[in-house]
Amino acid sequence: MTDQFDHSGRPGRSRDAAATNEQWRERYADTVMNTFGTPARVLVRGEGAHLWDADGREYIDLLAGIAVNCLGHAHPAIVAAVSEQIATLGHVSNVFTSPAQVRLAEQVVELVFPGARPGRSKAFLANSGTEANEAAFKIVRRHGGSARPRVLALVDAFHGRTMGALALTYKAAYRRPFEPLPGGVEFVPAGDVDALRSALGPDVAALFVEPIQGEAGVRELPSGYLETARELTSAVGALLVVDEVQTGMGRTGAWMAHHLLAPGVTPDVVTLAKGLGGGMPIGATVATGRAAELLEPGQHGTTFGGNPVAAAAALAVIDTIRREDLLARVTSLGERWAERLEAVDAVTQVRGRGLLRGVGLADAVGPAGEVADELGRRGFIVNAPRPDTLRLAPPFVLSDADADAFTAALADLLSTRGRTGAS
Ligand SMILES: *Cc1c(COP(=O)(O)O)cnc(C)c1O
Image (cartoon, rainbow, N blue to C red):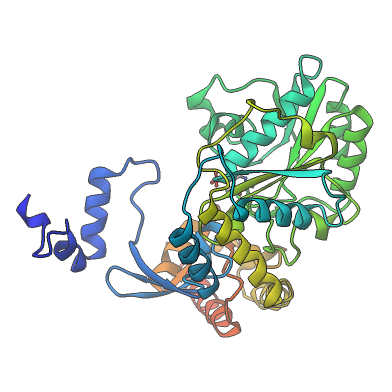
């Protein structure tokens, strides 16, 4: 094992400093469980909307760790907030609380339910999106009891990978290997008001929706659907749970996508994660009215949830979005960019809002996964949530020049692939 120690005695430093992308990938394949396949590149540093890999290659980051790094990499406000908090008080468990946790809960409640009467809306802080949805599911079970065993979710929904959130996730390949899952979940076609009306009844505890289905390829619910869903769920006494894990925290140009798409709708429960911590792991389940009181002492918990360091990062994110007027920036850059992308040959459609965009590709250019890989080799990080769609979810601090560089590279690549029959 001597080769793993340099003269400072620190394990692995000298070997690691010179390691290439390929060497890291081999070590990854040897030791990290194969749930993701071996990632194409090993990233070592980030700044703003730029990333560098282990071979020193630079990339423009148009994915932001899947809609997470809303302020980009190494934003000074997050660095300062996290450094100060970890140097003061890093973790206390939920046996205690901290000013950062309480302040974040207050802020998040106000962002989700603006103008809420104090004490009416409450937050549970967790560590991820799937956990935010687990807590929402438990609220729903508490609401439903034995009289309302059914829970509705939408076809193509993605709500996470833990057992409860997985039960609410549509894709059979994700669910089947792990059945039996928590029962009672049924899927109704997204956007179909008649299907929703006939599925809802007094035995339904809740409907879960994403305002824009991110993992399904950035597909927005049709206009009016959320309003109708609110009316119909209220009429039968079911809760409306809006999953804003990907769409929330300014990603669409509003604090919450449902504020933008359905301004009159107040959900019972809203879940957040991804952008909330700007890169620190944190999630939140925010509820209003009776739904905010359904979990009682002992019925739910977490060791890390709401920890002061993650909470401090989230407070810095919220403060920076406000101070730098980033919601307006997300809207203006998002609209300008979507127009330019739509003008690219072989782009069939640009979906989504703000800086959450699905770029539809013509069949002639071949699978979007291959296009994403080729863009990676050309220095642009994107992903392909569907075989015909690229997803863009960049940091809010992306420059016009970087957005335009991508548009030009995409146009060039698609015209080459279109000509050669994409093989
Ligand atoms: C990513 C995502 C989740 C799961 O979040 P994790 O932090 O990966 O557990 C849940 N819902 C939606 C809509 C998501 O996009």
